Image (cartoon, rainbow, N blue to C red; front, side, top):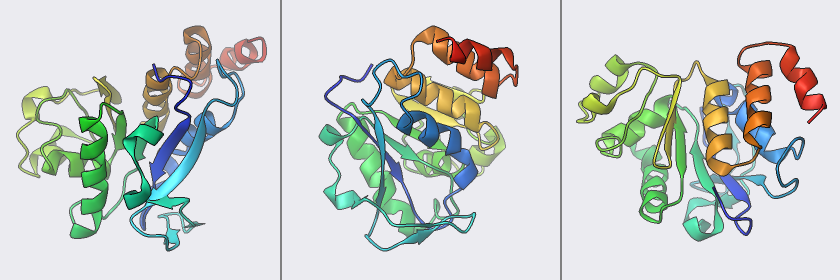
Amino acid sequence: MIENSVTTVHVAVHDTLADWEIGFLTAGVNSPAWHRSPGQFRIRTVSASSEPVTTAGGLRVLPDSTLDELSPAGSAMLVLPGNDLFPTPAYAPYVAKAKEFRAAGVPVAAICGATGALALAGMLDDHEHTSNAAAFLDSLGYAGGKLYREEPAVNDRGLITGKAQAPVEFARAVFAELGIYEPAVLDSWYKLYGSQDPAGYYELMGA
């Protein structure tokens, strides 16, 4: 669990960012509703430059800070959304920052194409992980295939990976790592959004 003094969750933003993959995550972190310690966490965006970026959904985002300004000591987690840039040099600064975070023992969460970038960098060779499909990572020629898990989201020692088609499970793994909700509240949250069971809503209203 992250200590109270560390409050900011940084989300990498860049052109082609897959908006739908992190919507549950960002809203859950930034909204104090049902939090164990309301107001402890906030979302801040970070990019390779200070220029606005355009997401896959056409949203224009002005980054709060740049990667060279970001230190693991000032962050609770680095979140890497899916994107089309992951196999190109344009994504190298994001991978370098992810390596810096992991070396410092700070969690990193990657989904969809971002898992491909971590695979190419060797970061999945010694961690259990998932991605959109085993074949996707195998096509990249990485060496971590024996640790691939056919799960919506996997957390192995603070390295969280998720499938593009599982944004709810990805968010749940992040919430659990950060300790944002009491376990029973997180169960109710997932009952509502993951299982689509209305009972989860009433449980949350009574939390």
